[in-house]
Length: 243
Image 1: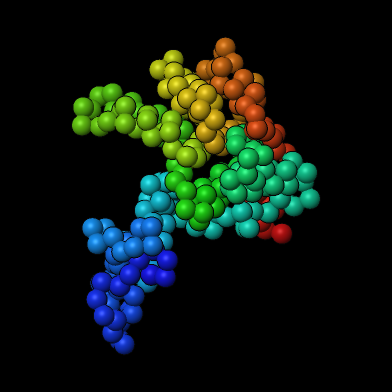
Image 2 (image 1 turned 135 degrees about the vertical axis):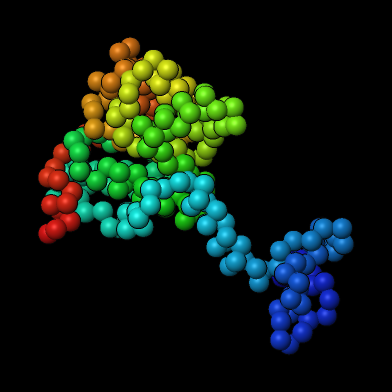
């Protein structure tokens, strides 16, 4: 390693000259070899990056068969709000400080879930953890935790509150029970107070989310700065893809 370590043994012509095939080198500290610590050799960088990405993808829990849903493959056509949604998704995916919360609302089949998945993928490409949740399924799982002591409800809630990026797909499609609403407001309020990135998609108006009679969720989605709520309008997405 040029700047971070020194080979463990004499190099060989047939293997990595930095680590002699061990995969690790001694760490350098203040320009001196620290024989008490080893670090991965630079020859392992590609493998480590690949394994990290694989882990991040598993952790994110994206829907199956969604590899085609990327920012580049989204087709907004000539529809202003769809272009606006795509540009906002790109900004969020890039980690820009100009937008940290993004809410996409509109009728079905406008490509909201496509953009939600694409943002997660881009976030992971940058090496950052992200978590995708389909809200009705999430709440089913959280309810199961209440009845199964082997499942960690507090741990799951902690992940949803603290993960660097949370994407909540199809908010408003859940059964709006008081219990469900409390779980949702807990997650959203934590991220609101701690300024953590959040993306939400919904088929409902943000002002009329089922169960949000006091407007606590809708108010936070609209008030967060820097954030934006985009009401998407246009033809069905399958129509645009077919052109």
